[in-house]
Length: 65
Image (tube, rainbow, N blue to C red):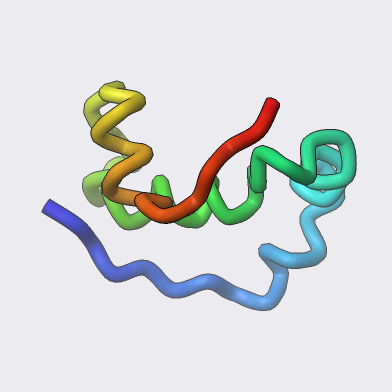
């Protein structure tokens, strides 16, 4: 079941995520990370089903490696 989460301004200042975004811009790591919050339960646990997660988080985005 999807959850509604709040993104705080500090998220965009996270140096580790910014570095990851710079190194992998076509994979959109920050957006994927935010999307995982919507499928995780209150303990941050979600079922690892990559294809289903892709459909739940970014269904219309094509990833190019």
